[in-house]
Length: 114
Image 1 (cartoon, rainbow, N blue to C red):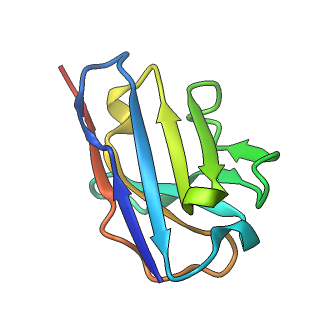
Image 2: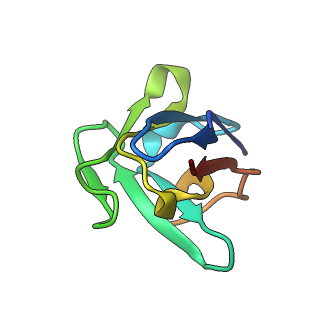
């Protein structure tokens, strides 16, 4: 199983980014999927979850109303649309299966700063 996150970068506060997670080695249509993040000096935090068919989502309170998780099972890809970004959103972002995680990918760095 390989998880490849992309789409991160440097953005000013209030800006937006769209992250992608391309998965290979398993068919994501069989799994709920998560986005996590890890800020410098902190533990990994669950940010958002999407159910197998994409109809159900859940978010950490810190991102609710600003982030949207989605998926394209035909492309075996999970997305995280991030808007109204804040400096506190600065972190490395990772995707993974829910419940029983696969080996973690390299993540994608998101930096929110002036």
